[in-house]
Picture 1: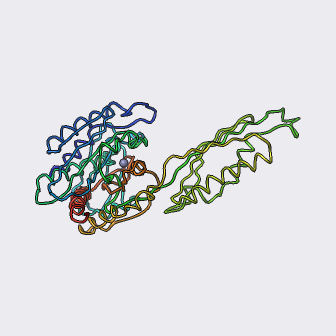
Picture 2: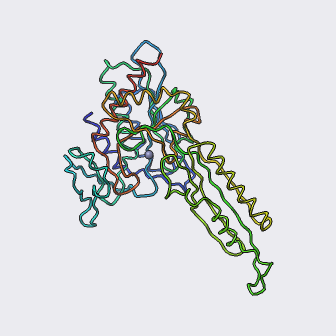
Picture 3: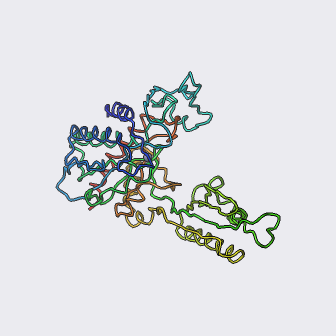
Length: 409
Ligand SMILES: [Zn+2]
């Protein structure tokens, strides 16, 4: 366990920011820098069948140490950090025995991590926090996950008295740009199920995410001299405006939480001749999700019958709620829950208001709930992770391996 922190600090010092505009995999060359290091390290800790493919997907095996046949299970995390905030020259700061007060991240720039604003900090009084220096993100998302998985595997190799079946692990590129699962070879991985170690605070256990679609509404108008436009002009801006007015005003991101879905208009551009609306639809419930898509089509139809054939709509599904794939094998959630409880960690089970690589993998027939990696305030300069939370994640991984071997026939 003593290598957990140095490992984490080493990984975050390597810039692995991904790039949504790139067409290659990995999307940035620099992700190879960490990937190659991890391959070496997996050999060092005694993992078998260590492989890295041409897209920088890493896989490795911890062989079973029992005769009984138990399902192969997996643990997954991602190499890249978000394109939203710089991950170059990360200089982590270690705050030992946190006193529950403001943490000055950067004196010169007056950047302070304060429990007045981030009240979660108060849960970690007395613990060791790893923060940024206020100029970059930290990269606990998801280098905490990588450090935890490798440390757990090392722990298991050093403790043969803990009995477990075959364990597979994988590290993927480009999760932050939604492509971590795209080139993941589920057959090669060969696990019956897996867990992404990519959640936030201690106890998080997630197996539900949004159903997601995006829509684009295009409106063609007709420009005529405004002084002589009566019954002739078709103003695309006006029709776009009417379209927006027909959406339910309370079903937007800023007014919804938990299991409430929404429409989110994120782009609109327009002139008289031409307007375009782009929006996304999110809903955990499959039926509500379909109803939302229907509503958009109905509004389009309604405006067509009112003004004529000036509108078109394209709706494209993006990802689906993994719950459907996890529910038939619910013991995989139960084992994770029991592992946490046996370690005195209270499981926090809640639906993700977003998507995960796990949802895509679940639909590739690798059911894949998400477990906490310990960090907070991802994707920005206030990101931090308590060392104790990372240690708990290591213990949860070890315990899941152990319980799977005991419980599953
Ligand atoms: Zn992540």
